[in-house]
Length: 351
Image (cartoon, helix red, strand yellow):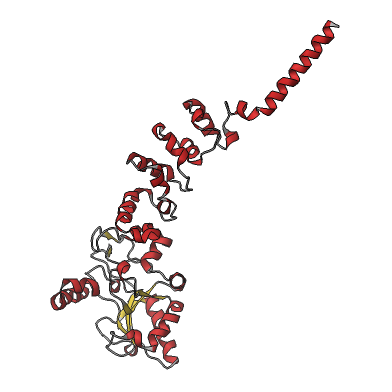
């Protein structure tokens, strides 16, 4: 009888222990394994090694998880990691570590999500984004794109020499200059019936052929277009800029002309187009301009310096200046109503 009683007690003890384990399994297991909360196996192991489980409060922090998993964890920032909203960006932890090191508070970091979550964000330029935002809070939604364009610097500063000037998608502007010895090697001369100025009568072959096709097609509809200015040598461009400064002053020249090696005309991909021979001013009032607005992209051309975007392009509105980029790119730019600078940041990875 005594043996039977002992056996029953043992069985009930086992059952009781089993019940206790079942209803407390989460608490018991997470003493040794934090994957049940959502942490990776590597993070779980580090939580045990660092003895920081008491700070977790039975909750999961993806920011902390990624900091531990990527070996970017800094113990002084433990409580901050737990409170910072994670953003799926491979450089997110490095970025917030820098911000915390510079005394940014958790709320401030969470409020910078518009920068850290941008698909065009580059960790090495974090300080530039922050500086530009402080001065341009009205442009909050586009801080990363605008900084990547270079607008955190004054025009004609922080200039980079272009490494692939022969690319049909080359970006030439006030931050990007052509090499001093560059000249396109596939220039083609226009027939006299298509042009006005004999001094700038060339364009690169692909752009040349596309412009002729566009002019032929618009002429068939009873309208007229001519090439007013195509490829320019660096000396010719320098002369234009120098004369503009002499005749109108530097401020005017910087808006209406380009310095040598900074002009798209020197690529052989840009064309000033006129509907009346020798006239550019007032072009936007002509029906040819309306036609170009609706059709230029079909031939691979974009209006390079559109109205309302002067602060991005650095140039005054030029309804006559068209740039060849190919039909696919031109259509994308028209669809999104963006400048070529913005396109280059979004789709070509420019900074």
